[in-house]
Structures are given as C-alpha cells and as structure tokens.
Length: 139
Image (cartoon, rainbow, N blue to C red):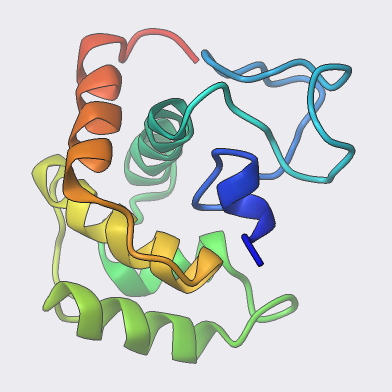
C-alpha cells in the first residue's frame, strides 16, 4: 500500500494550514480530504519542505538534525529520538552537526524515508531542490 505522503506528493507530510498556500499545492477541493497538503508533483512537495527548512534555520536557528527533527516531529506525536537516530544513520551526519542548504537534499531523502517508508530517487529530490533554489522568494 502506498503511504498518504506519497499519494499526496508530500513526502515529508507537511500539514495543511489554511493560511498558507504553497506553490504547486492543490486546493483543498482538488485534493484528498486529509490533514496534510497535497501537491501537483513530488518536486513541489520537496520544494515546500525546503522552504520550511529555510524558515527553521532563519527563525528558529534549527540547523542540525536534532533541532530540525524535534520541531518537525515533536515527541507529543512521534518517537522523536528514533527519528533523529534514523536520519543520522541514513545521512551520515551527526545529530548536532551544523547543516547547510546544500545538505538538504540528503536530509529530505532521509526524512521522506522516515515519514513514508520509501527512498525517493535522487533525480526527483534534485528537481525539487532546484525548484526551491529558483523560487525562494515565494511560498
């Protein structure tokens, strides 16, 4: 069975927020009823994840796996420590290692694996990251 995140082209399971409209996001009437966003393609879902990572870095100074995952997958809803261990294992980064924007494709690959149980292909991740790089100024 295909996970909801994959069906929604939302590999990091970004929650739907009525006041936020992402580029490439389907309107609620066009998408499956869910608490999560639905995107026209996987690349747009990856782009939105990059935008959130940018906000985490700028607003919350969350630049390491430990801080990013604690915010993304809080203990009230997840086994956050296991999530952190898995992402560190799959990326090769330490939990407190400072990540830069160029590390995000690896991070997104690992987080998508944790969230949806699949390994996204590198070409899709690169295309989504390129969408982010070329359209940083918009939601």
